[in-house]
Length: 384
Ligand code: NAD
Image 1: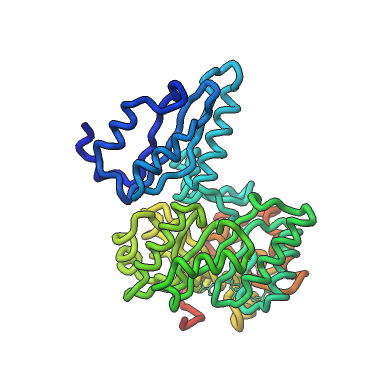
Image 2: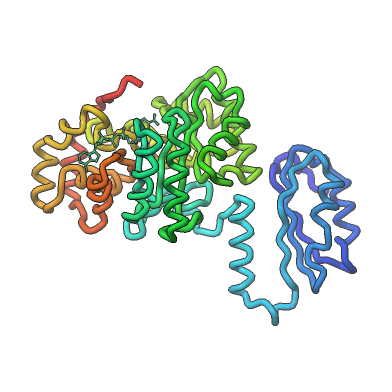
């Protein structure tokens, strides 16, 4: 008897295949509780019959549950090394969108050597990406393609930028030319506020425009208390269906507003994308979201359109850049990564895109980090 079955949204059901079927006791288990609205994940060992149609049998028994693809492993270990089994389990967890194999204590820790951070969703995310705000379809296609050639693995777009199709074309070109594989890259898009009551369609439309069968991260573009929870729940459903891997938020500037959404959600946001740069360092929000294992991603990392020169010409930043033989843009981007902000500088200029990627061959000292941290004016450039 499981008294607290209501506490579980996701239930792994494991069994051996006996004579081409699940043991009767598993059928009894499935009949004994109300599994409607829960996610059921079957896995089994077998000696030749594989899943033996048991996933379909579970689906028939539980028509109101979401039953995910099952894993089957041959019981005879002589034919399966532990490494084979482990990688089969990893692949399966990735496929069904439950990839947690890493040490959870590493969530949110920036790995500057490999350029990645582990999200609270269990997925690894690159910490430097290409931003595509204001780019046309053609510009986005080129920028994404150049960026992937330069070693970027993170791409940021949004439905409201009107360039998801171009982004998708740039990705396809790079994949077709063998520069990257789909699983090597991390694609982020955003749901626009006017789509919040129609999230399921908005997600499918973004998938179609991007030409992808899953999106690595989808975020709500803006806080909108009237219906952002509805939109977030549509994203949670899409995670269960494997259409989205991770989900998060953008433009939540008050801890209480972030908590409002988290308290209504099942999945904790993996990431918050807010305006963040040396003059607006988002210190309070970063500290707040870190309690949830949620990471900060900086939009306007270089100060954004119209304000980049102000940051590039800041004396402190300029001096540090000269010291390292780097540009101000590179110093600012390196500061973001060392400060624990994912950065997505935007550009349609091939040389700038390359320049912005060359930030893994130097390090800012603690003193330099502190000097830049002390530039914070808590001043946003955008009123958006
Ligand atoms: P940014 O801070 O990345 O600055 C971009 C500007 O800097 C552009 O004018 C570009 O030409 C210039 N630039 C880039 N690299 C340079 C270099 N090496 N030398 C000189 N100039 C350089 O601003 P952004 O692109 O607006 O923001 C970054 C990304 O964040 C966007 O592209 C978009 O993907 C995302 N974004 C999200 C939101 C949101 O509401 N969530 C809002 C704005 C932007």
